[in-house]
Image 1 (cartoon, one colour):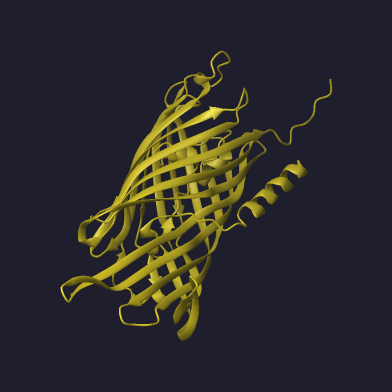
Image 2 (tube, one colour; image 1 turned 60 degrees about the horizontal axis):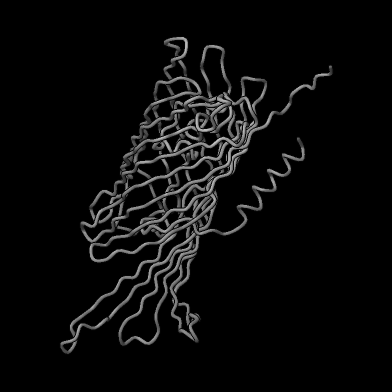
Length: 424
C-alpha cells in the first residue's frame, strides 16, 4: 500500500511540473482566465450535473459530501482536448488545446467516511489576437497599426476533502483547496512610420485558499427507487496577485524580438474576491441502474481590486448562474454474459450566464454533452469518455462567437485497501 501512495504522489508532482497550454479562447483574456469545469468526466457527460450523486467507486467533485459513499480506493486521471472555432463576424479560425485536467485519489475509511485529495486545473489563459487598423492613404487601403495580444498560463488547485456518512442517509463533507499559478499577458504595438515597436506586458503570480461545504440526503420512496438531494457552498475567498507591469521598446533581429529600452516598469498587487458560490441539486433514480437530475449554481459578481484592474472599463463582472440537467443509464451493472450491458451511458445539457459583460454585452454559454463508462474487463474500474458541444458569446458589438467541441478521457482505477486477511 505504501508503494501505491508513493507512486501516486510521484505522478502528481511530475505530471503538473510540465507547463501546458490549457486554453485557446479569446475570452480567457479577462480576469485570471477561463474558469475550468471542476467536474469529473462522468459529471461532464451528464451536462455538468452531479451535486446529488455519490458512488461507491467513482469520484464526483461537485459536492464533497459524496466522498463518504466511497467503498473502494479510487484513483482517477483525466485529460482532454478542446477544439474551438472562433467567428468575429468576418472570418473564422480554428484552434485547439490539450491538457491534463485532474488527478486525484479517494480512500474510504471505516465504511462511513471518505478522504479525497488531488490536483485540478482551476483557470486557464491561452489566446493570440491580432487587431489591425487600415486607413485610406493616397487612394490605397494602408495598414497603419497592428496590436498583437497574447496570453498564457493559469491557475491550479490542490485540494483535500473529507466526508462523513450518518446512519440516517445523510452525508456531510468539507473540502479545502490551495490555488496557485502564473499568468503572462502582452500587447505588441506596431505603427506605420514608427521605427521601434512597443510591448506592454504583465507577469503575475496568483495564490490563495478556498473552502467548500456540502451535504447530501437520500430518501427511499420504494425498495429500489430513491430521491436524492444535494447542496454545496464554496465560501467567499480572496486570491492575491503579485506581478510586474512593464512597457518597453524592442527591435527584431533575425526574427527574434530583442528588448531595446525599458520605458516603464513597476510591481503591483491585486486581489480577486470571490463571493460564496452555491449549488442546489436533486434527482431520482435507482442505484447502479439509472438516474436523472438537475443542478442550479449561482454566485454574485467577482470583484477585482488593485493593480492593472483599476483602470479597466471595457469589461465588468456581474452575478453568474448555471443550470444543468442530465442522467445516466446502465442496462445491467453486474452482467456476466454481456459487456455492453455493463456500459454506463450518459447525456445532459447546460446553460451558463458567465457573469462577464464585454462592451455592454452579456457573455453566455450553451452546451450539450454525452458520455460512456467502459468497464475494464470484469472489474469495476472504468475508462470514461465525455463529449461536449457548445457555443459561447456573440458577434454583436464587435465581439467573438465561439463554437467548441470538448473531448475528455479519464481512467478510474479501483482497489481494496485495509482488508483483514483471512486464514483458512
